[in-house]
Image (cartoon, rainbow, N blue to C red; front, side):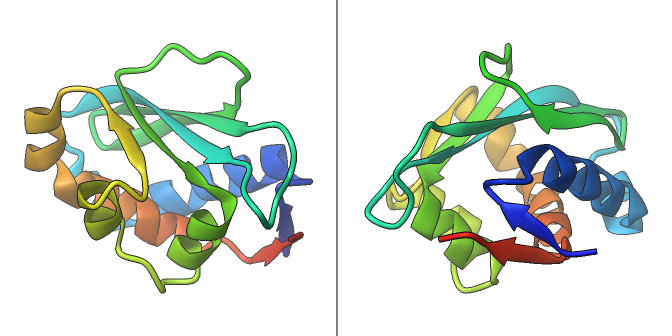
Length: 136
């Protein structure tokens, strides 16, 4: 089932959670790791609208929650413009490079994120496997 972003953000988040939990590589990468993430899509020249924020909870290799949330509490955040999210979800933009060059704003303990790069990469790979249509 194709899900449209940002219109169907709640459905997209549920599909993302399922794709995360389908990945044995994610379970291995996130074993022993518990954290809450905020992923935020910001407006840009392509998408003019309210930010779309996803709260994603990880507990010892399992994604226990993924949904939109207007004001999530979180341990780590990744925020960036809509067009860059589209590029990342299409596999055209490397999330690590985008974090290092400032394309995406990062919040949280940088050392932990560096140690858990494989977990983030697996979350992104799962997001890339959601059948997504981009509204803008």
